[in-house]
Length: 255
Image (cartoon, rainbow, N blue to C red; front, side, top):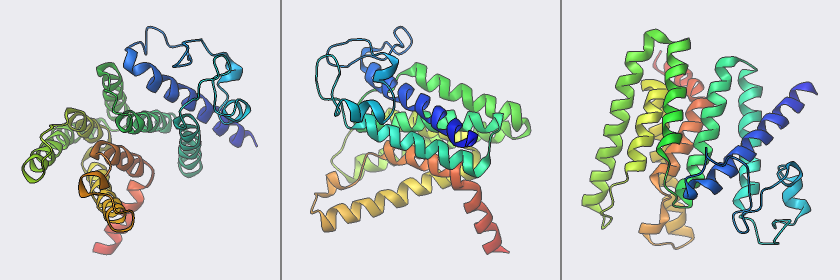
């Protein structure tokens, strides 16, 4: 019962921080004005307006002050953060090292929605993610830090090659710096092996989603596959949660 309560509390805090970060990112006031507010009327929200699930259902998805509709993203993030915290805690338990991975996962969920809503990632948020990666390696795996630095470079290079290939093959001439930065940060946090798993997950899931959208939903090829940054963020979550299991299966298969 205590563990369930802890999961709910942490997931609730993560959900509030995630939605607030996404709402305030366009205004570049994440650190200047961290108090959650309604994105329509700019009224500051009280604690009872921010309870995950409960507040959204109680107000029928509307701001309690101006009755403007709140994005469905609010409740989606509530569900995702609860699932993320519950899965990670139930699998790995309560550890300080695990808390860094939990926070990093929360940041990846935020990035997933920021990219979906075509919002620019703030450099301050990326710096925090980089600091978490450095702390993670220096505190718990200092001997593997050179590998993490190499993984960061390779992650950025892989995304640069992907963008250049996309520009030559398709009509899309945009070079996505967001994806390049995300690839570097994932490489720094995950290391070589888990970073490759995250990249493989992004490529495979993107191909599957593209085939389903194109074949069954008749979407054009250009709109069939989600933005690669979203797939990469999802791949990072997968690698943090199940990456070691995948490596164990791979090792047993080789032997």
